[in-house]
Length: 156
Image (tube, rainbow, N blue to C red; front, side, top):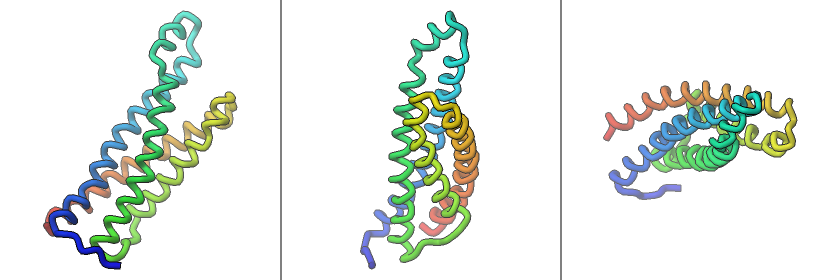
Protein backbone atom coordinates (compact mmCIF):
# COMPACT_ATOMS: atom_id res chain seq x y z
CA UNK A 1 0.00 0.00 0.00
CA UNK A 2 1.46 3.31 -1.06
CA UNK A 3 -0.25 6.52 -0.02
CA UNK A 4 1.11 9.47 -1.94
CA UNK A 5 1.15 12.47 0.36
CA UNK A 6 3.04 15.68 -0.17
CA UNK A 7 6.32 15.93 1.78
CA UNK A 8 4.85 18.80 3.78
CA UNK A 9 1.83 16.74 4.88
CA UNK A 10 4.06 13.78 5.73
CA UNK A 11 6.33 16.00 7.83
CA UNK A 12 3.49 17.55 9.83
CA UNK A 13 1.77 14.18 10.30
CA UNK A 14 5.02 12.91 11.80
CA UNK A 15 4.81 15.55 14.53
CA UNK A 16 1.18 14.88 15.56
CA UNK A 17 2.00 11.67 17.47
CA UNK A 18 4.86 13.06 19.59
CA UNK A 19 2.92 16.23 20.36
CA UNK A 20 -0.10 14.22 21.45
CA UNK A 21 2.02 11.87 23.54
CA UNK A 22 3.73 14.71 25.41
CA UNK A 23 0.31 16.22 26.11
CA UNK A 24 -0.86 12.81 27.33
CA UNK A 25 2.16 12.50 29.61
CA UNK A 26 1.23 15.83 31.21
CA UNK A 27 -2.41 14.74 31.44
CA UNK A 28 -1.29 11.45 33.04
CA UNK A 29 0.65 13.33 35.70
CA UNK A 30 -2.46 15.40 36.39
CA UNK A 31 -4.55 12.21 36.60
CA UNK A 32 -2.04 10.80 39.11
CA UNK A 33 -2.41 13.96 41.19
CA UNK A 34 -6.21 13.63 41.08
CA UNK A 35 -5.97 9.96 42.05
CA UNK A 36 -3.81 10.84 45.04
CA UNK A 37 -6.40 13.43 46.05
CA UNK A 38 -9.14 10.79 45.78
CA UNK A 39 -7.09 8.54 48.08
CA UNK A 40 -6.49 11.46 50.44
CA UNK A 41 -10.24 12.18 50.51
CA UNK A 42 -10.99 8.53 51.24
CA UNK A 43 -8.57 8.46 54.18
CA UNK A 44 -9.39 11.90 55.66
CA UNK A 45 -11.27 12.54 58.87
CA UNK A 46 -14.86 13.79 58.54
CA UNK A 47 -14.09 17.53 58.67
CA UNK A 48 -11.25 17.36 56.17
CA UNK A 49 -13.29 15.03 53.95
CA UNK A 50 -16.10 17.61 53.71
CA UNK A 51 -13.64 20.12 52.26
CA UNK A 52 -11.93 17.63 49.94
CA UNK A 53 -15.23 16.32 48.52
CA UNK A 54 -15.91 19.82 47.18
CA UNK A 55 -12.95 19.33 44.82
CA UNK A 56 -14.81 16.48 43.07
CA UNK A 57 -11.48 14.72 42.57
CA UNK A 58 -13.12 11.35 41.96
CA UNK A 59 -15.25 12.67 39.09
CA UNK A 60 -12.33 14.57 37.55
CA UNK A 61 -10.04 11.54 37.90
CA UNK A 62 -12.56 9.30 36.15
CA UNK A 63 -13.15 11.82 33.34
CA UNK A 64 -9.43 12.48 32.75
CA UNK A 65 -8.77 8.73 32.81
CA UNK A 66 -11.41 8.20 30.13
CA UNK A 67 -9.84 10.90 27.96
CA UNK A 68 -6.40 9.35 28.45
CA UNK A 69 -7.68 5.93 27.40
CA UNK A 70 -9.27 7.25 24.22
CA UNK A 71 -6.35 9.47 23.20
CA UNK A 72 -3.75 6.82 24.07
CA UNK A 73 -5.34 4.26 21.78
CA UNK A 74 -5.86 6.80 18.99
CA UNK A 75 -2.34 8.19 19.42
CA UNK A 76 -0.67 4.78 19.45
CA UNK A 77 -2.50 3.53 16.38
CA UNK A 78 -1.99 6.89 14.68
CA UNK A 79 1.75 6.86 15.39
CA UNK A 80 2.08 3.41 13.89
CA UNK A 81 -0.03 4.41 10.89
CA UNK A 82 2.05 7.50 10.17
CA UNK A 83 5.27 5.48 10.51
CA UNK A 84 3.91 2.93 8.06
CA UNK A 85 2.69 5.59 5.63
CA UNK A 86 6.03 7.41 5.70
CA UNK A 87 8.32 4.36 5.62
CA UNK A 88 6.31 1.45 4.25
CA UNK A 89 7.04 -0.52 7.42
CA UNK A 90 7.06 -0.36 11.20
CA UNK A 91 10.35 -0.31 13.04
CA UNK A 92 10.28 -2.90 15.80
CA UNK A 93 12.17 -1.18 18.58
CA UNK A 94 11.96 -0.71 22.34
CA UNK A 95 9.98 2.49 21.66
CA UNK A 96 7.29 0.60 19.72
CA UNK A 97 7.14 -2.33 22.14
CA UNK A 98 6.94 -0.09 25.21
CA UNK A 99 4.24 1.99 23.52
CA UNK A 100 2.15 -1.09 22.81
CA UNK A 101 2.69 -2.23 26.39
CA UNK A 102 1.65 1.14 27.79
CA UNK A 103 -1.48 1.21 25.64
CA UNK A 104 -2.40 -2.29 26.82
CA UNK A 105 -1.79 -1.37 30.45
CA UNK A 106 -3.93 1.77 30.14
CA UNK A 107 -6.79 -0.37 28.81
CA UNK A 108 -6.27 -2.89 31.62
CA UNK A 109 -6.23 -0.14 34.24
CA UNK A 110 -9.44 1.37 32.86
CA UNK A 111 -11.09 -2.06 32.86
CA UNK A 112 -10.81 -2.07 36.65
CA UNK A 113 -13.32 0.81 36.93
CA UNK A 114 -16.41 -1.33 37.68
CA UNK A 115 -14.54 -3.03 40.53
CA UNK A 116 -13.24 0.31 41.82
CA UNK A 117 -16.77 1.71 41.89
CA UNK A 118 -17.85 -1.26 44.02
CA UNK A 119 -14.99 -0.54 46.46
CA UNK A 120 -12.83 -3.61 45.75
CA UNK A 121 -9.54 -2.93 47.52
CA UNK A 122 -7.60 -5.41 45.34
CA UNK A 123 -8.71 -3.45 42.26
CA UNK A 124 -7.65 -0.16 43.85
CA UNK A 125 -4.19 -1.47 44.71
CA UNK A 126 -3.81 -3.02 41.24
CA UNK A 127 -5.01 0.20 39.58
CA UNK A 128 -2.50 2.32 41.51
CA UNK A 129 0.43 -0.03 40.89
CA UNK A 130 -0.33 -0.44 37.18
CA UNK A 131 -0.72 3.32 36.75
CA UNK A 132 2.63 4.06 38.38
CA UNK A 133 4.25 1.49 36.07
CA UNK A 134 2.51 3.21 33.15
CA UNK A 135 3.74 6.62 34.28
CA UNK A 136 7.33 5.39 34.57
CA UNK A 137 7.25 3.66 31.19
CA UNK A 138 5.53 6.64 29.64
CA UNK A 139 8.20 9.06 30.89
CA UNK A 140 10.92 6.80 29.48
CA UNK A 141 8.92 6.45 26.26
CA UNK A 142 8.63 10.21 25.85
CA UNK A 143 12.38 10.69 26.10
CA UNK A 144 13.15 7.89 23.64
CA UNK A 145 10.72 9.54 21.26
CA UNK A 146 12.77 12.75 21.36
CA UNK A 147 15.55 10.94 19.47
CA UNK A 148 13.06 9.81 16.84
CA UNK A 149 11.72 13.37 16.44
CA UNK A 150 15.28 14.70 16.10
CA UNK A 151 15.89 12.18 13.31
CA UNK A 152 12.69 13.29 11.55
CA UNK A 153 13.66 16.95 11.87
CA UNK A 154 17.16 16.38 10.46
CA UNK A 155 15.71 14.51 7.47
CA UNK A 156 13.27 17.35 6.68
